[in-house]
Length: 390
Ligand SMILES: Cc1ncc(COP(=O)(O)O)c(C=O)c1O
Image 1 (cartoon, helix red, strand yellow):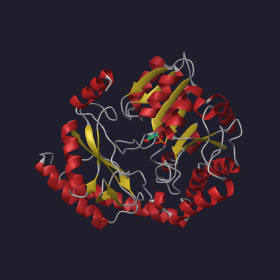
Image 2 (cartoon, helix red, strand yellow):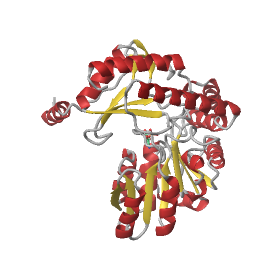
Image 3 (cartoon, protein in one colour):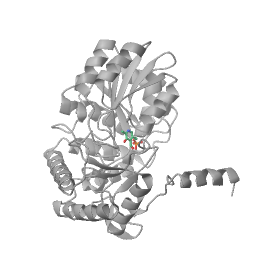
Image 4 (tube, helix red, strand yellow):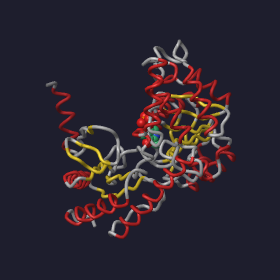
């Protein structure tokens, strides 16, 4: 084996940060087979259960039969198919924006959009706990990165006062992916107006879930019209794959011309587009309302049960519920012990979260039952006691 690679792996192992994949067999349902054992899945972003929904599967199969399996090229060559445009119209209407543009993943969206908007001489104000793909996008852009303390708009205001120069972009997760709290979008919109900045919200974890119609964190907080770029993904609550930017028609044109991850990559295939389209339609129906209600009820039940069991969990109402443990080793012991008892919750370590804040990150789904969740909390409590965490 190559020495440099071996050393690198040993360093990661010594830090207690070595990662490996776990095999899930079958569908992404509430119960899955993980490495051959039946477990309750507590770490999937399939929040509404749509990854396992017959309407999405049927739409996907029909699209393959009608359009084939690949788009064959990037969008600006010959890879723009009817389904791309239909999905973009559906997303624009869902998000109540003039236009939308599809990207191949959330990561591709963030690394494409940000460098299309800002460059050298510009400044990006970025929440400290924003997703890694946002940081990657800022790095690629060459703009100056100014990080502000998590959700702290007073600090952000003084940083903007000091550093605003050239074009300014404020960028935040809508629902923070590892913490489950929601960005203060009303205050961020006021700062954007005061400093003439652009405001971008990554609503990967809010779209489909938050707001009366599932339009996301901007709908929940009543600021949809104030957000210049509403980025969201299809691979989480929407049960499919890919991402989008909901923007003005003008901004869409700019992204088509400037976003390198859009320009230089084969576009999403028909099967994926059709599943996304079915999902965008479904979340706006009464069934979508029912799934959101179920998810909300599961979230409240799980949060309350964990609190009653003695865990201190960050305030919030979203379906992402962390138990912050601190040590990476203890976190992984906790996760492995739970898995052995039939509950799959992933341990999250640096660099995904800041050093010293390793955690178990639980995610709820509409397809969980209260009985399953009550059972899981019993086991979380007993493992937590064994490890001295509670
Ligand atoms: C907040 C956030 N943004 C972007 C992404 C990347 O999205 P994708 O998985 O579609 O690449 C993720 C998650 O994985 C995320 O949590």
